[in-house]
Image 1 (cartoon, rainbow, N blue to C red):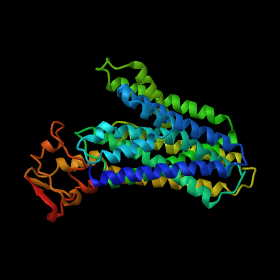
Image 2 (cartoon, rainbow, N blue to C red):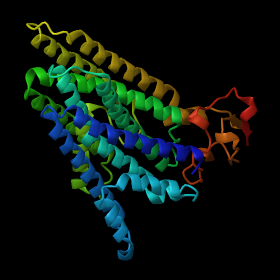
Image 3 (cartoon, rainbow, N blue to C red):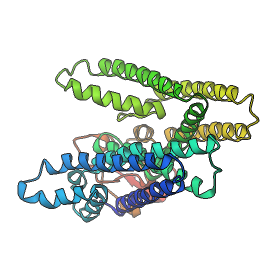
Image 4 (spheres, one colour):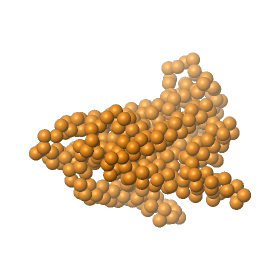
Amino acid sequence: MMICERIYHAVSLVLFLLNQTALFASALLLRHYYHCPMILVAIAAASLGVNCVSAKWTIADRPKSGRVHLIFIHCMLLALPWRYVRLARCSQEPGSAGRVGTVEVCLLRLLHGAVASLPTVCLHLHAVLDQEMSISAIHLVCIGIHLVDLGWAAASVSRKTSRAHPDRMILSWPGVITQTCWRLGTVSSRLIVLVAFTVSYDLLIVAVVFLQWLLMMVIHLMLFSSNEADSPSKCRPQQLLATCAVSFVCVIDYFSFSDHNTSKLAVYYVLRFVENCFLLGLWHQSLAWHNSGLMVPVTAVALGGYCFGILSLLTYHSCFSSNRLMADLSAMPQNGFVCRLPFQMRHKLPSKFNVLDSSQHRPDNSFVKFGVVDNKCAELETRF
């Protein structure tokens, strides 16, 4: 693992600790309202869920003599910090990243964010939009930390799943940052719209979310049955459970473990924009008889955040996605290509087509520094 990977995991650990601090700070900020017990329940559920899943993944493959300290670590609810420390300790061993489970760490981070951070942000927004309290800088900081942690977790899953497939380019640092900005904009806009609708229409939000979840699940099942018709050996209950979970996440924002299909993304976000505008219109209608000063700023923040997220999405898919980088590599001349290598390191590559061959070994972060192929940097030219 290269120094960039260690920095990446250090940043991930710092963000996780900041998010944990912000969660308890949010509980203290809302201690005079009924939201505080709900935040504490979300924190406890996230910690227990993450540690139970981590224990199932970790302890089952260990001999009985080596399980005692692992059980103690998971009973102390320290699964994620322990996994990050383990990644740092194994960083000098080639090929150790797969053994310590970097993809599992990212999935656990995403699970923790979905169970703890999402409800906390919604409760913050509900307290503000219901005019139970005035928003302050500390509230904005806590909400921002929660949203950044969610975006980073989603981007980390994309980065590590791309690393798990040798025939795909590794998602780069700018790719992670732009994808985090993409999630930050679209998720924040979506949560503002749903919470604003909840403030005015109360339990009708349950019907709205259920119908959206049902629609997403039907779409995912149709796509899965069309893509996996030739593989009946997979476990159907596990497929259904995974489809239900991914469909529920898609009620908030687009998520997929596979490559992001641009046509699916376009249809999803166009429909999501129309739905957000419709829900905002209903919220405006409910406030028509009240002279609320929140109508204009909330609408501006919701639509502005959505536009920021879509702009980041377009930047990511046009410049930094793994599919885009693979297309750039395929379009290069066969006698050589130009690339920026990490820390001036040059890797001897066998041929243009073997670069993307899954049978060949590809070092971590091997060909592209920041994942940007640059045909104009002659000083960093590597020919084969």
